[in-house]
Amino acid sequence: MSRPARLAVEDGPEVLHGIFEVSRETVERLTTYVNLLLHWQKAQNLVAPSTLPEAWRRHVADSLQVVAMAPDAARWADLGSGAGFPGLVTAMVQMERLPGAHVHLIESNSRKAAFLRTVIRETGCPATVHASRIEDVSGELAGEIDAVSARALADLSELLAYTEPFQNHGAPAIFHKGKNFRDEVARAAHAWEFDLVERESLIDPDSRLLMISGLRPRGATGKGQTG
Image (cartoon, rainbow, N blue to C red; front, side, top):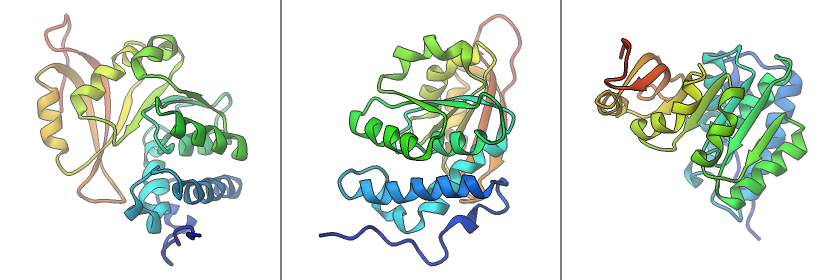
């Protein structure tokens, strides 16, 4: 019988310090989440196996940076949620901070959706799983959302198309992007106009968190700004 992956000695809740303040109760929920991840990973490929020894840093702390960029957003849509990063982390953090906090997790893979529901049940975090394609639910949810997140899902141009219904209602989008983020921004700017806030990742100096707002197709009426 295989054993759950062991966390690196330096990897644990302490890596969250300096990113965003969380309560002891939130840390307890996040610990339950990580334990479930390690257990389910034995049967399902939820995250890259190489990241498991640093699950707190590579996944939880990395996700926490999203909340830090939009701390006042209570209602989120997390696109292509996968194992729940950053959406479930957002739900666990915001539930104690903001009345009415809720995260909609959109994940079409039924096995991953089952994992997400298990974490929600075990932690009591305010989230709903939509086992559907993004385009099938975005129109229904768009007017209820304060912010959108996505991590390791698609090229920026495709992500902007996914988020357009939400941004039409004023919800900014926050994306994790790797070292080639500037190339993705340049390609996206051929088709879209948008305002961009760029923040260096505290987890990986070569990565960035991009907050995009004011999105509209290039050539649409009105002035836009890219950064």
